Amino acid sequence: MKRFQEHFDEEFIRIASKALGMPESKITGMIKRRVLQRISRFLPEYYRFEKGISGVEPGTTLFNLVSDIEIVKGFPKIHRAMVLEPTIQAHFKGLPLVAIEEKMNGYNVRVVKIQDQVLALTRGGLVCPYTTEKATERIGLEFFRDHPDLVLCGEMVGPDNPYVPKDIYPEVESIAFYVFDIREKDTGRPITLEKKNELCERYGIKTVRHFGNYPVDAVARIVADLIRELGAAGHEGVVIKDPEMNLPALKYTCSESTNSDLQYAFQFYNDYGRDFFFSRVVREGFQSVEWDEDGDALHERSCRLGESILKPMVETIRKRKRGERITENVRIRVSNIKTAQQFEEHLRILGIDAQFGEPLYVDGEYLVEIKKLNQSTNDRTDALLNGQFW
Ligand code: ATP
Ligand code: MG
Image (cartoon, rainbow, N blue to C red; front, side, top):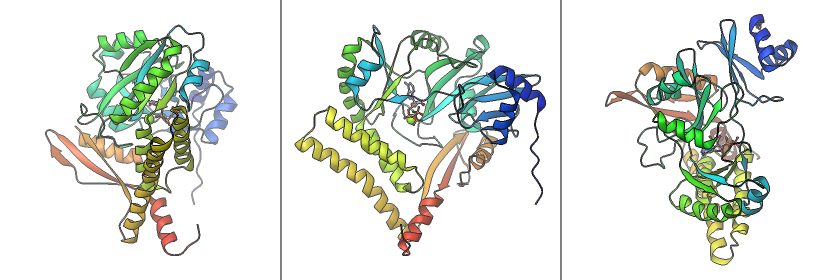
């Protein structure tokens, strides 16, 4: 076998070391350990932090430009409140007002301008060709010509979503981008919510719903009411924020959304991490106690949870028993057929085994069905059905 020779770009390491305030040896070490990964198929080439390290968020991307680099910080983790009242009180203590925004359910995207291109980065810091096409068409360069140092952080939602397909917003026919934060590219520091909303309005960019700013003491009760309404409508939940964005945000989600995640993921029970399932079951426990459920309400919640876990799994086992393959079916809609080819390559980089169907030309766009093969669930189910031990 040919020995793989890692190529180190001395110039990049030198500039990155200065920009990140880290010794060059540390950068080299991270590249060797593949914490910092070089993506050279893309122009301009870039490096991304697959994991976070001291002071650098995971998903941070470093674009390697001629004798310069541009840093786009990763999007920070949002902490989850398991119970509303005490968590909101403790976390936002001393603030005059707290903002409640809708938590939209899609995938996290950061849109930036690098040189003269609008690029869309997914959570892990990779440029997604599909999302980039959408962001270029829907947002364009206007905002970035005036604000080249800002990042639009938002959620891509809609049925033509190749990562987590969800058809829960009737106003979104294909896929749409809703901004929730605007941050500085190189520091990741957010601007205030008021400035964010004002800027987005000025440039005609959609934002997530803002339900208002309320005194800390009132927030838990308002969120509890809102959550029931959002849940009934199939929406995901809320994110509670300091309007000045000095404190980190908190998230809280609806039981209906938790159940719909479980229903989806249990079809592929061996492909999703165990923590995905466990944390969702625990959420249901805490919500039930905070909402003081007993008798019928608790019975109903228990049945709903049980069905969300068992029914999709039973269906998967039955399908496999009949010899059917377990696949996750998603679709994309592209204006340029080249985008679909680049997206196929992108999924390969992510290690996802996917089959792309024949493109269907509809109203000036190509609709492409994608079947992602959930190898682990297929194999495990076969093995167990054939008498192997758990
Ligand atoms: P984490 O942020 O904790 O790593 P995760 O990737 O599991 O979480 P979620 O549980 O969906 O994601 O919650 C956080 C995500 O919610 C954000 O990364 C963002 O993509 C999304 N989001 C949707 N609406 C908002 C909003 N209004 N404000 C902030 N984030 C939002
Ligand atoms: Mg999400």
